[in-house]
Amino acid sequence: MTSVGKKRRTAAVDQGACVACGCCAKICPMQAIEIVRGVMAQVNPDKCVGCGKCARECPASVIEIWEVGA
Amino acid sequence: MKKRWYDYLWIVSLLYLLLGFFNILFTWLGLLCFFLPLIISVATGTKGYCNRYCGRGQLFGVLGGRFGLSRKKDIPGWMKHKAFRYGFLIFFLVMFLLMLWNTYLVFAGAQDLQQVVTLLWTFRLPWHWAYHGTLFHLGAAQFAFGFYGVMLTSTVLGLITMMLFKPRSWCVYCPMGTMTQLICKAKAGKQP
Image (cartoon, rainbow over all chains, first blue to last red; front, top):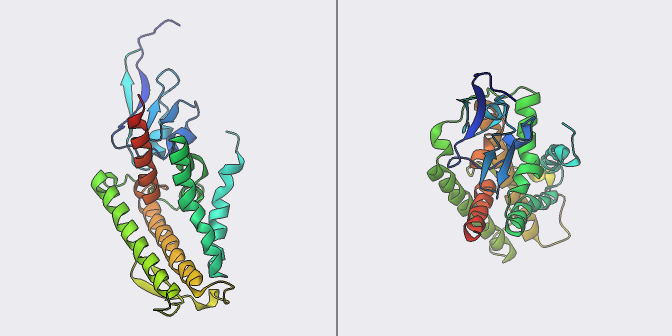
């Protein structure tokens, strides 16, 4: 796919503060988040579309949506 | 997304809380909520219980989400701080041990059965209507009263933070969640 110069958005987890409850993984429509070894959530940037559902759901509010270069 | 059988475990949690109003001895079943998360985390090194099977978390999610009882605001910074989470875990465990000590006193015959449920470690609510005698030792009934106090206290705290903050705010400082995450961290640390 060719880049059109648009910025895309992706979710980023503050892994030090994550409680690994799994709410984000459950709500993610792209199955882009997994809980790694019961310690923290990890976003797969290839699957994430930056919709922000996880950030709204996260009870600790430790997920942010960032813009990244296309 | 397709719902699985374990997505309905919030109904089990709700039934459990209701059963405690009718027969206190049912509250022994709540030990499952203590042992399963620990067994799963020790055996598999995951928080599979929190992630999939926790009916209590689902109940807060349903009430705060589908029923709209949550303000959906961010939890204050101090509540997600490690010092608070670990401090609450220690406080919770100490209170749990105190409850076990009271149970032991009844088992040992040093104390009479107290037909009360202690809410928020302070308020002693009369609960005699849910006691219809026991086939076992009176200590077994005392444990049921004490343990129901633990479960009801965590539910009330969870409901308050559900309303004030995000639906599953309880998951941030849940003592079982903190404990299983510590187990997972220890296990993950040992692996390359």
